[in-house]
Length: 114
Image (cartoon, rainbow, N blue to C red):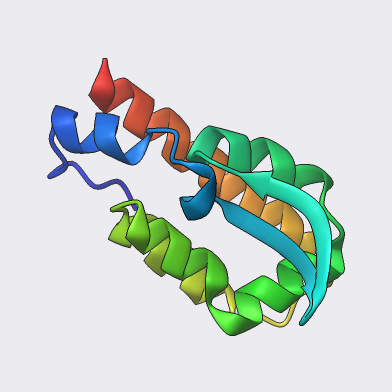
């Protein structure tokens, strides 16, 4: 899981706060925005914890989280979240797993970035 090959500057860049046009916007379903957005991994970890579980199921199913993580430069995290798609777990459990996976990755990147 740990990506020890990532360098400090990559970790700093991955943890950056992006502009609103690059933020992740949460939806419950197609055309149903929740009015919640995240502009960094840290913000995402905090937001996803309280988001409607149906939204997490929707985004994991479409690969939206993975695409955003890749856009921010973290293929490792994208792969970890992609692996959750094939698991047969409840929406609440999926939300908890996405939240904890992102939180652990943020902690890992913060240690590298120090």
